[in-house]
Image (tube, rainbow, N blue to C red; front, side):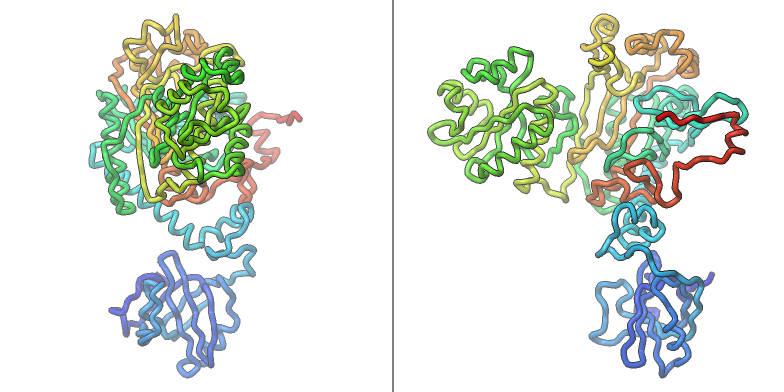
Length: 588
């Protein structure tokens, strides 16, 4: 080894030792013939002292050094001295009096600043990612991801799971997003797909008798990007045989309890609350509620339809709904400017508007108050549990828009009023999802999640006649308003799987062309099974209180799905094209 210790290792107990360190030069400063250097590696920083009285030639050598030069330094460990200890460094009690210096590699002037105080722009950080990753914050993020992944493996192995790798080159199957495809050189005109998830393979592993499978799996989806989405992401993929829904939930809760404690020392409360999908939409306007604060939504359609407010009555007559939220104690706290910001939030999200009323001892104080008689006002106050000093927001629109808008209003209230504790982790399960959703544009039914979820037994009779009534054993895990995992009990009977496929436009012939290998496997005895996929990137980002998963991925893509560092995607040369027997024509 070129070093005897790392830059974060030495302590006062090492005083007097002759050691050799390697690392990058962070800074150097000179005072009266003595130079003080900080040498850094991923483990920490150690102060190196160059003293003219000890070695004048060595001090002259440091004049040629530049920040981020890679150095090897040997010398004796000594106590810094009373009053000179740096409490911000783990090695702050000691320093090394240098005896020798070797330059292992020179560094040019850096194109970006790599300290945490002055981060570069997003594009420059991605272009020079190898420099950005030297920042202590990024080193910490990668270490956190590593520790969390190791904790996951430890727990899963303790529960008798087998870690099995599934293929990266597979058959293209429709799973909700566009596939990334790879042309075959040996079979011209044919393509592999990169996996959006190991879904089909892990089900086949259950047929194969593996019983308990897990994998920290790479998944690839060609979809539009955002802060919590990348072309490549990593999920903790899990599948179990002979289980019911509660068994999967218990396994995941145990896993997260162990991983949170092992990684960051946090005790999370289990068992997690379970909320039906329909109840989540009714109470929070979404299926990813943040439960760190209250402010639940209430439907008031049945009350306001008897009012004289024409806008509400028109929406209701057209099949819409009216929902409301009680912003408690905000009646006097919010100015007209504050309220206008909420109205703008609603209109920016497709709503026609956002009505409001301040509650006083005498009733509603609002432009809409004249449309509500005392009886209706009293009913609204009772439904919304409102009292003097509260502020009521109303949204009248199509159910989807009304729910989405009031969910955003609710979240904004939580942030604006300081109700969201960043140190609190509140999980919940969202259960009993609809199996299908209707595509208005295509005028056809499609899977709400995917077509392998087991329908509830009591709903099987509605599969062909009334798909809207079919709910399934689908469940999502939500943490602080973010979906962290999704899973289901799977269909293990070929006849049920074929019926579901027909509903979403996959007749037998087409189903077998796409999924024949899965359907064939089911013919030979498929056990009841279920599983889940946990977003590793999102979970680690959440632990670090980050919203952008690129901060926990070593080499992410930008918002255009490009890598500024290596230049991908990029053209390939003609020789490769000829080997693939392909010719491309880019359509504009």
